[in-house]
Length: 310
Image (cartoon, rainbow, N blue to C red):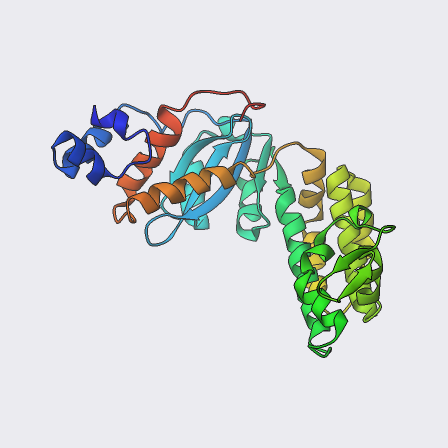
């Protein structure tokens, strides 16, 4: 009975108290269940893999999943290249050759491993992380411009209080009807206020324009537009340079993000559940116990669903 209670996110102590047993007894029942599941198999892999990582006990762990079923495949105690290589090389080459795509963040370590481990796979950089990289850069350029302004100026107050506006699609900003903006204390269209801010620095304007080009290309899944934005970029002497340099370095993998439907975005929900499991237990010190609980709640008794429902 304690095993079924463990399907939900309850601490072992609470389950043990409910059934008048020791918490170690509950853990033993979970371990016995874990022994029935062959989640260390090395005979097959999904055609579409996704890579990510999360903090397990006291260090980061590597996790891979099925890009179609949005389900955890395995979790490794280490995210080092050595550990990942050793694990996947345990699969026959014929199995690894069948992998068609690997979705991941802009992690150079993972990107460099894929060709060796999965010779026929295309690397797909997660679309969210492409946008996150350039939005972080734009924010830093905005802050750099603000440092040269008086904190009492209307431009400073607008850029500080309404910073999220700069990250929105420019086509979604109000260009006709003026609205009251507390930051500046008068009615104005959002487009005009953004334009006044961009007029403060040519470099800020250029960074904003390339940001808009990139998020527009990602939203429309326009690979040609994204490639053109990267190739036409010229150094601005600010944080955007570094982001564009990285995107250009992995241009082929970044462009694949717009050509394929796959991403590792589903790990966001999985990692959120993992964090809740960890918090409920007030942290785990035993890595194996933690992983068994994750698989118990997320994989072994999770209702199967199609990709559309995932």
